[in-house]
Image 1: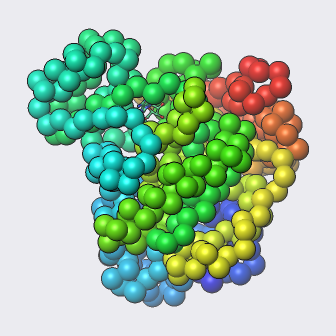
Image 2 (image 1 turned 90 degrees about the horizontal axis):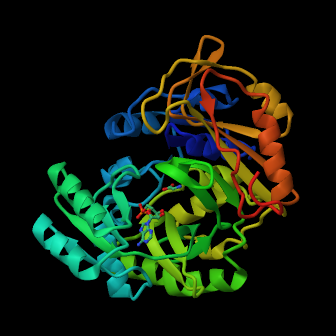
Length: 424
Ligand code: AMP
Ligand code: GLY
């Protein structure tokens, strides 16, 4: 079977790496891929843009691709699944209508309200004055969100009313036309990535990520500086509640809107101090860096699950099998990220890191001649598994010690909540 994976991050590298573990997968083409996918046997990069639907469809048809797996949200929100399906290709990833669950927060909130899904109270505004009046009435802390895709930069958790006012002013003075203002929820966050075929929904192991750049979860928000799995906060009892109270009613509500949702339904949850799960956001794709922590623990062949979703046969699949133990992914970034950073630095020690027992997933790299050079803000996701979190985390950091490039930065406290010794 030949597979085409769309995207160029560490998430896509992890998806390709996992798929290639199966001998059934003859070849994978990654569009456009990165230095990591370029280095894998049976994988080749194809330098097309992720929104070149026509080019992707043509290549897939000519080359007998049996499955297209879409990594990032942007092409899904633009309708890549609809386009490819119209060309009779099989796509793992929701249609444009389904991707609204991530691409429009107001749409997602509406769906949740309709389906009675627990989430923060919120209101939608198209005028700054009305938004400010609502903030004045509600008080702080309060959360201000841009309605559309904002690459993780559209959310302000405002500690004061003034901070919320300035977030509202900033959003409306940019291109944003609609703003969602939301009740602040306290608690601990957890990411539940579930697979859906439009009828059935199955959870992958829960994960937690670290969004902030600085140790102790401080400083600017990033695309994610590390993740670990399985997150113990999602106990079996909570997982059962998430299934009944959140995932199943969401897939049913999508179906009621005529949306056959075949892909990842990613629920970003807050577990409140009372122990209740509430939805902070939905994403329409695999999480990054959660996927890099989840997939190394997966025993079931990934293609079985993806093909079952596309063919609407998830209910017939045996239970998803997992390795015991735990995994940790530490993101290695370019100095300066998430602000400005330099590209083009030569990376050394990746092979040694892998010999030391880690999987090195490439986030922003490029292969130039025989060298791997930095190409993005997040450069690598170094993942290790172990019999427990302490072992997995120690192994990931031992592997990072082998890696060098100018200005490299990583957090030294990934997984501090789950380590026996707490912060490193
Ligand atoms: P979102 O893109 O909606 O997931 O928001 C990004 C981040 O903002 C989340 O991962 C949370 O850390 C935080 N956040 C979002 N909504 C809320 C909320 N209602 N209460 C507290 N924190 C929130
Ligand atoms: N790790 C957060 C996300 O994938 O949106």
